[in-house]
Structure formats: structure tokens, C-alpha cells
Length: 229
Figure 1 (cartoon, rainbow, N blue to C red):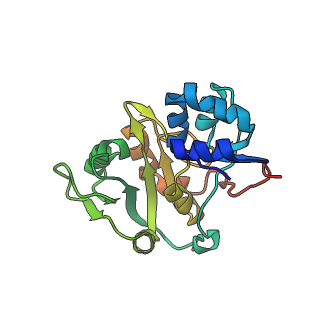
Figure 2 (figure 1 turned 45 degrees about the vertical axis):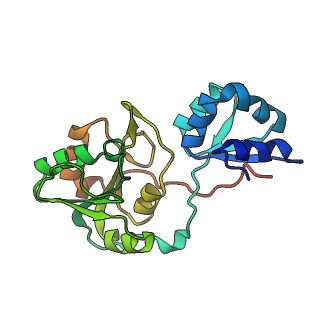
């Protein structure tokens, strides 16, 4: 199975003999779009079977003449993340990256925190880059296992991922973990298995009636490899 993040990856695909399978994650789709004049002929030659995370990626690939099945894949042990059925705390978490805080929703999280004082909001992966509300906490860059333990009884995660005003993402592993654990996942991209937010008002509304909404969506279907022969 090929992942195509760089010219070297495309070189390996070009030299490959036999059946090819490509799984598209997100940024790799944009990389192809930006370099399609040189890279699309390699895809055509390989004639691969493709899959991707979501309909947003599927449509972008279709615009370049590539069909991809929508098959979210969780690259971890599903059995490690089970819904405990316990009462969840009024805590929300997001993941972020240094110098990409706005993309991941740090300012927006602070605005939501200002409206919902009885909730706490936790940001992983970066340190604070702006003055923050009293109920916003930064955990910095912590190991995945440690973050899993800290957030296991949190009520919700928010995945914003907005670049230049446009939402773009796969189905993040953080979102998948949250759904497997019975937590609410609020996303800037519309999926059938998450609560879709177009702005701060939606996020506040979802959290305000969290108990009523928690189990109102279909379960996510993961790791269906029916597209591989």
C-alpha cells in the first residue's frame, strides 16, 4: 500500500510492478493537486485502487479524475479504546501544533471557554500563544499514551482544521479515539458520525446539551478493507 507525501514516494510508485493500492490521508491530496502536471501521469500509469478518509477528499480526487473509496482507517488497536459507559467530565480537548494554533482552533477554543465557564478546555501539542481564559489549560507535547490516559473521561474533542478559511482534514486519529470511547466529536468537516460545527455558536450549543446529544449519531465504521483484493 502506497502513501504519497513526497516525490520519492511517487518514484517508488513509478518503479513498482504489479497491483498498486493507495491510501490518501489529507495533505497528500493537496500535494498532488499542487503538482498534478508532473505527478498525475504517474498515477495514471500505476492504475491503482484508491481509498481515502472522507467525502471531501473523495471529491477533490474526483476533480483530478481519480476515484477513491471512502474507508476511514484507524492505525491503532481498536480494542484499546472502548466506551467505558462511565459518566464523562465536562472537559473538552483538542490537539494542536506549534505555529499552527489558529488552524487547529486555539482562538476559537478560548472564545467557547469564555461562554461556558462550567467547562474546562485542554489543548495538547503546543504551549499557549495568546492570553487565555481561566478555564483553558495547555498540556504541551505529551506522549500519546499519556494523553490517552488524561483524556479518557473527557466529554468531547473538537477538530477544527481550517486553513485559509477552508476546512481540510482526513478523519483524525483523535476523532476516531473519541468516538470509540463514547465521547462527542465536534468537527469543522461534516461527517455522518460527528457533530458538525460551522462556527462557535454550534459548538456552544452542542456542549450545552451534551447529555442529550452524546449518542444520537451512527457509529463510525472503521477498517473496512473490502477495496483490497
